[in-house]
Image (cartoon, rainbow, N blue to C red):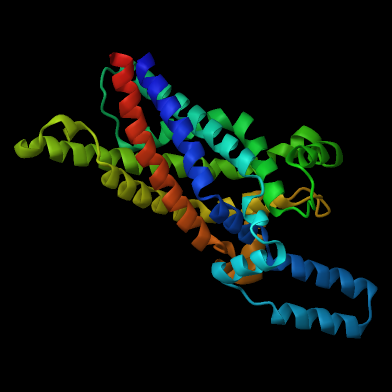
Length: 323
């Protein structure tokens, strides 16, 4: 049991850091796109109406009408023209550390819970419902440590930080914002977002079990590799699992990013449901799903890469521990 937990934690940590770093420019792109809102334009319009004349109001409305959604490629070109390559790698160190920590703690909790369930139930078989429940519990287990790291990384990626170093940004967040409490912005979203990794890994584990069972049934393929997925199988299955999970919870994911990217609380204490309603009223479903293209591209390839690497690293670690 200890060997199982050790291999899961080590393989998940290394694979998580690697996949996050390999696709980091897409991470920055999708985060910045998700953080932007048409509502910010409307808010500025309302503020100006109270303090400016009719001519200024007309100019603001015209600017709002001229503002059209742009594609991820156009957004990336705009970022590059303004700051070159540097903005695409802002915060890569904290993101890699956050991803490694998150994956290690998630799989530590998930594997421990799964082993405990098998011990008390007397069966190694778990249905999708049990997998989802254990996955949700495992997700909440790492949030006290990883959510502040996530909030910090989001501020590095989306904030107007000039040439500030990451630790200088962290100091500003702690001293000028809401302190430690401000590092947990968006935690409400995890009442739903905790389902994302649960759905992803449940889909992966359930389909993986089916594929391995089919391999075992085929006598010709029942050999040394019949109990594991090939790199290609793990990669493709990881892509499918991440796509299903991302589409299911994306509006909550975007609302969380928008909350974390805010530097003040002039609107009182915004919450996740109110943020989602605001997005929908500003632009309908297209506003709720703004940035889903880069999110799916990065998320799907990141998850596929992470699960493929984790699968192979885990097998290697288990072999070395047994020998």
